[in-house]
Image (cartoon, rainbow, N blue to C red; front, side, top):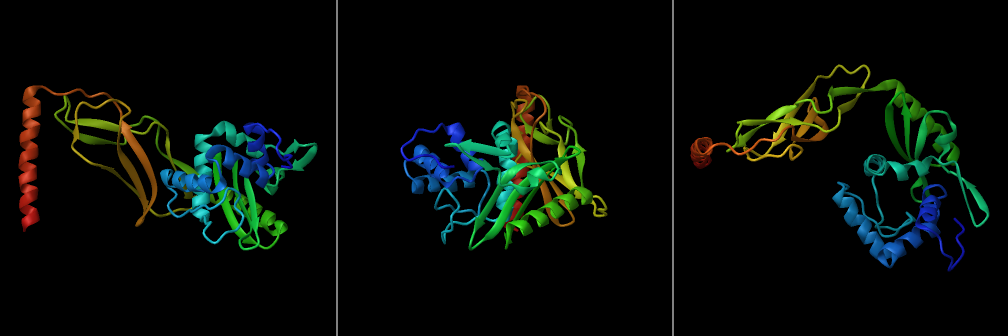
Length: 290
C-alpha cells in the first residue's frame, strides 16, 4: 500500500491496504503489531484456523508469499470466506470498495468480478509463481449468495473469465432450499430429571441447503446429541446437531439449541428417571459382555 517506513498508519487504513490493494507492507505491519513478529503471528493464524474448523491449513508468514510449509486448501479458503462474511459483516464491506489511496498513490481493487455486474462484493485475488493466479470470490443474486474459490490459472485474464463463467453457472444451476424456518422445531431431545420428558430443538436461523435445481436425490436428516440431557435446561442452550445427508454424504451440519426453558422435575420424576437410566445401563453392560 506504499506506507512510508516508520510512518504511523491506523489499523483501519492497514485493513484497507490488505483487503483492497493486497499490500504486503500492511500485512506485516498488522502482524508485528498484533504478535510482535511475523513468525509469532503466523503461529497465531494456524491456532485460530483450528479454532474455526480449518484442519489442513498451515501458515508461516502473514502475506501468502510462497514458503514450502505455508499451505491452504481451496475448500478451507471457501470456509474461511464464509466465516468472514457471517462473523464480520461490517469489515467484509471493505472488500467491495473499488479503490484505495495511500501516500497519494491510488490503486484499484484487484478483484475482477466487482466490475462485471454479477453481484460480486468480495473477496481477494492471489498469485505466486508456484500456485498461479487464484481468486476467492463471493456474489449475491436474488438473495442467493455463492462463494467461489479457484486457483492455478496462468494469467489474470484467464482467472477473470473462468471465474465469471463459474459464478454465472452457479446461479443458473443451483437454488437455496429452506428446510426449516427460524425457531421451527427440528426434533426433540430426551431429558433426565426434568419437569418434561423432552425439550424441542430449534435453530436460531433458518436452515437452508444449496442444491442443484434438477436434483433427484432424496435428502435425509437426523438429530445427533448426547443424552439424556440433564435438567434444568435453559432456552438457547446448545444441545445437538442436525445432520442433513444426500445419499451417503453429509452435506450440511447445523447446531441446534433448546427451544424453551425446562426446569427440574419433582422428586418422584427424578427418581423415576434415575431408575430408568439404571435399567438401561445394566442392559448396555450386558450387551457389551456378549
